[in-house]
Length: 305
Ligand SMILES: [Fe+2]
Image (cartoon, rainbow, N blue to C red):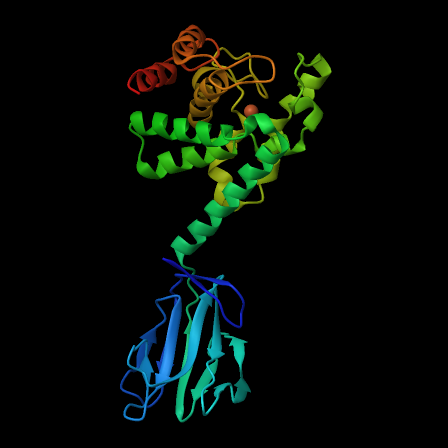
């Protein structure tokens, strides 16, 4: 759940991100888990402290989760809010900060462990941004990365791979052409056939892709798929001229998905093929350009649409 909130911190998109607690001193509530994007802390005449209680008569402060950080904001309380003995209107909280609301003291504790789901979400956002960067550069790949990703995912799932692997193949599909960021727009958008020297420059994108993604350790497992996605089953592809099963499996999957997605979309030099024409082409390329088994699986998927 993502909540949006307007206030003194501006328009906030609060996030579920739960690895912090409040340790409340001298109070029966003991430990409170900060497990929603916004936690209201209040006081009433009868009860010393309420947290997230809708019946609070005097609201005191709130804690907000935002971009993997926590903030405290005083809500015009009578006695003020203090962090480590200093009065604050709002403040970024650090691990072990002491928050004082009137006579109540509590310690904010953020766990060392990183929330895996949160990191996974950040990683996916980063991957999507990278894919958009290529698409902004090459209008003909608009939506292409997503199509290749979907098809690659379907191929891997139909071939019986584990869900965890299917997800990685999908990510490799989204990013397979990321190296085109390093290729000139003039070449990418050229309607005429490329000169030999121009084609050599475009071919560099598979190596560039690997270089661009190398620093992101969470993508290390997909680098071979990016680097080899233009190898051919008969060994006549690039960059290494690998053949058959020497080509990493994920690269072979992406090659089939990429070829089909390119055939069935309009290109500067020709209109899109129909499914029927594409099946014919894929079947003709099985065993030469494409892995024959994966091509067969693709044809089955297209026919079952
Ligand atoms: Fe490519």
